[in-house]
Amino acid sequence: MTKVLKCISPIDGSVYAERTCLTRDEAFDAAENARNAQAAWAARPLQERIDLVMAGVAAVGEMNDVIVPEIAHMMGRPVRYGGEFGGFNERASHMASIAQTALADIEVGEDDSFKRYIKRLPHGVVLVVAPWNYPYMTAINTVAPALIAGNTVILKHATQTLLVGERMAAAFHSVGVPSDVFQNVFLDHDTTSELISRKAFNFVNFTGSVGGGQAMERAAAGTFTGVGTELGGKDPGYVMEDADLDAAVDTLIDGAMFNSGQCCCGIERIYVHESLYDAFLEKAVAIVNGYTLGNPMDAETTIGPMASVRFANDVRAQIAEAIEAGAVAHIDTMAADDGGAYLTPQILTNVTHDMRVMREESFGPVVGIMKVSSDAEAILLMNDSNFGLTASLWTADLDRAAAVGDQIETGTVFMNRADYLDPGLCWTGCKDTGRGGGLSVIGYHNLTRPKSYHLKKVTS
Image (cartoon, rainbow, N blue to C red; front, side, top):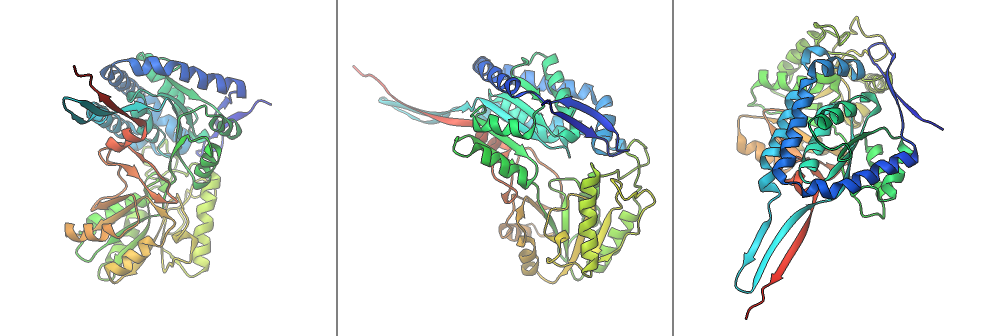
């Protein structure tokens, strides 16, 4: 039976795009074509691969006027924010700039008798399963370094952002990246799992839900196929008594609400020192009350609908349960809140860690704020989570931030900033956030395998 993927636009609930899934045989043929093309691609000079990838990135940029409204239709981000090309280009450019060094042989030593070194070789065929919330930036995190390292890539994008993979593949093919080297595919879950379990890929990179990551690992069980996962978080912010209050409020509330809260490293819980708590809350409420919830195609809209009614209803349920348990909601229902995908952003106080809204990933425009009296209390609360992606610390004291950061179970520690991915740093997490690491030199290490050479010289 033919399966069809449908992107339902959160703007009005209409079908924005639909694509037919590959059959099982077509999917295995695509994987085989990628495998057959890999050796020739890896044999090309590294600089040639870099140049082709960066030309593909530039070609995506040339599509931006079409891409921005397309993203708004598919997942609801307001057009006023201009799309993702800035971050898309920044990440790819950084990985291109460090490739020669990151992929260079590691020289161990040479003398009259031996030459020893370690090469980094591409895995082979890399499957990238990308999410819908930042559809271009999350995909390029792996697509660019995987191709540069000499892998061939098969991209399976989220149904909610069905057209993104097509755009990327068309752009890369237009500049000369062979069609079998970078393929966009439409697959159902069963076919994806079978491909992984049959060793169609040499490495799988998945960004998405905990359940999705578990499904990837189950499919790969016993195959020795590497699986890298980034599964979201419940990221905390901690505002210490010496923090720049205005900067902390502006950044943390933006980190909680931008993209309708649909950010892997979005701020979902905030702990504020008791001396700043009242002032922080007053400023935070004023910011959110200044938002305009509405159609993302309208220039005045600052916060659009969530990507689907189902996601919005999950957040509504968390908010309702918290209020029933004693939490206080500070934002009145906005006019555009339709009980569907359009959801009023919310700030909650009098929250506890017994509430789902402070424990489970919300992935929506809601944040709970709690008062704390010490670093020790804040650290205990920040670590009281099944997730560990980022934490945002606000203080004028760098040494204090580093000391607190050392005690937090997280992949990234921010000081006086939040919700940003620096491509020079490894993007990684712990606990239910997953394992592995993207970008930086470590990203290249995860997309290649080491091969050691121990060469004994023949002497007369």
